[in-house]
Length: 137
Image (tube, rainbow, N blue to C red; front, side, top):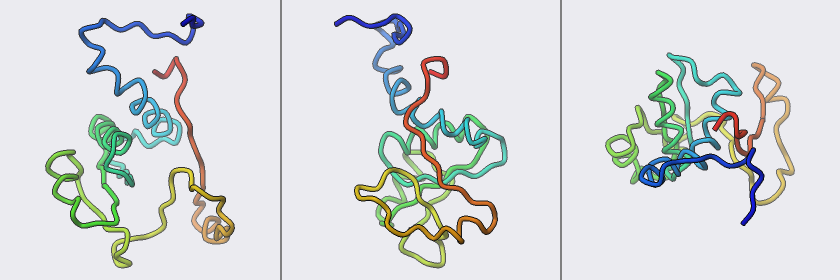
């Protein structure tokens, strides 16, 4: 394969398995956290997903000095989120007493109705991010 050198990062072979997650899941989560100013100590970040991306968000949250909450549909994942992945708290999305408005990720089908007025109140926003730049990486 031939690559443009501006898009290639060199990594010692013995570190590749440790560094590889940062080159995909890491930069995919790091970039929007920094872009939206969610890297300030004292903030609280919520993430839906116990997979690689969600785990990276919690790891960055700890490094930034922020708190991290995993948001899930199932209470079964609580122990893993707190004990294994290091989240500060756990929120069950189906419990109306715990849940407010959260929407991240790309829905499988287009969103036909987005409550725009609810976004306007309090200056909320809907945004997206694909992946970070080579410089950020």
